[in-house]
Amino acid sequence: MSGSSPSDLAITFRTITRRLGEARGDTPDSHVANLVTGLDRQLRDAAALMDCGPDPASIATAIDALPADQWTDGQLGALRAVALEIGRSIRAVAAANPDPESDR
Image 1 (cartoon, helix red, strand yellow):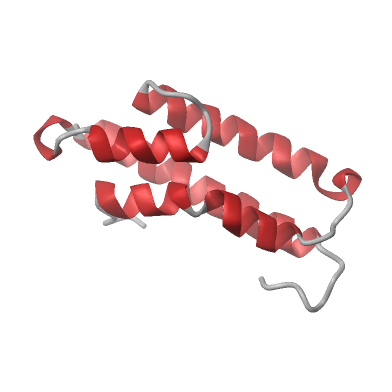
Image 2: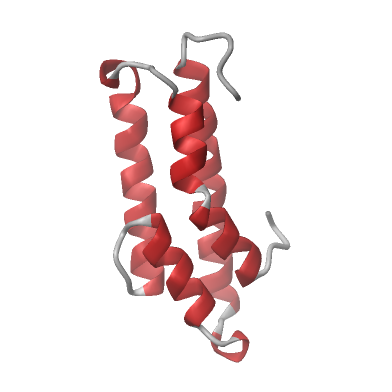
């Protein structure tokens, strides 16, 4: 992820909802509530960086809408860091899933 381009990041954010659903499976809310709360915070962080709504699709759309010459190294680095945190959160949700048949 450290060398990911804005278009790579847009794809990452577009797939969050699907990946979270696969990781979660039928895990009860009580088993993943803290993890999902952390993910919500991470999405708000990404939304703040992109000045958009905190849902993954809005973030991806904002990433795609920003021309390449308008990205700053700091903004891109911060967004990459948030994307890495989100990946860790999704893996933690998968680890909390008691279903051994789940797609992790």
